Image 1 (cartoon, chains in turn red, yellow):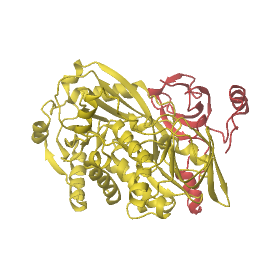
Image 2 (cartoon, chains in turn red, orange):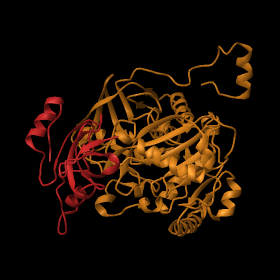
Image 3 (tube, rainbow over the protein chains, first blue to last red):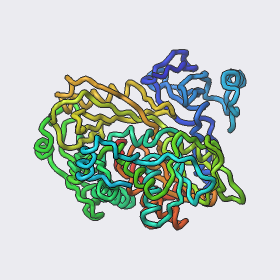
Image 4 (cartoon, each protein chain N blue to C red):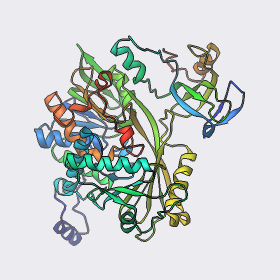
Length: 108
Length: 415
């Protein structure tokens, strides 16, 4: 079972306490956007084998959204961070790079 | 290829079974093929088979990173049905189901297709309405299903408890010609038939790159060297996003884990397949006597081929209410497979932005039942370069066009 630390309330939350929200840092496109942009926003996903940045909600806890960096091959959690950001914190990226030297880095 | 028959068994019995040949050859890859298919699961092998059988294209290699049929083909709960709501789905699933009827004969390989009937339980008022609607739609589509009441469900499946405290059984959608087949045998049967047509099935050969020139595919880099090809088919289920990345395009697909398990074998107690979509559980009894149980998917991206324990707990908890006798059973094995989920929960059989490269993916939690139909449609697409009627609605650009084949509402999670 996944165990994620909620950066909003500080609790180590079980997977059953959380709701998965899919890929993080997606650029939002709304009315007036081109078909390509809207399709990318709605449906296209990186779905990587390896490091994945994703959204979670502490649904049965504080109810707040946050972000997590996790490996989809091993389920290793690299860290969690606030959702009030457009990209992962530098410190977390460096930590992942140290653990996964082959990782291509965060690509928006 | 020596044919399998009762006579062959008698002949081999007379000579200590020394005359059986290998079911398929394991050749080294040639330098070049007309068609390379990545993924020797059911869908990939079926594609190769129908390319050969329907179009006479036999200079084909099917390459596989692991072993033949070792992905979702060997991990599903073997349910076959075609009671879908949307016309596009019903057409391809019914094509597949009808091909299963004659598959053992067509392949000269016993796939143990058992049309024992499938009931999808209605356990809420909205499910009753939904299944009545599906039954009407199926009648128009030429798919034989009917809505049955709770008493008929009990008649067909005596071990069921109708008056569950939380989700009583109110009725069901009954497809008498749905059922199960032996999943491994489907892959093995296709592999044997493909090998017999002169196709090369190359296992333990991971694809590491896809080469292209002027917007067209030229070949694949593999663990066993470079292979040139005129056409490429990507048929790799959960790994589709990874391969698409190599080919230089993105997919509307996310990979998640779906789990199943089997109990210890017991005497025959249930001769239909039961699906309970509200509580995310489905149940059938294998020929060995094991109760085969499938559950819901995990909600997060995952490539580990194992799922979360609490999903098993949820599934078992729900099924024990509906089938109280299951509470005494020990579970023998539990496993997971990686399924590729699209935005509308329907598959993609399509051309791609890369020329002469075709993709067949997105079968999500319901791939086994479509293997022959999907292979049939994919072979048409790869042979002509354009989709025919079966595959035409399942193109990649439907997401941009908003032309969904929306089975996520119609079929629920058990797809």
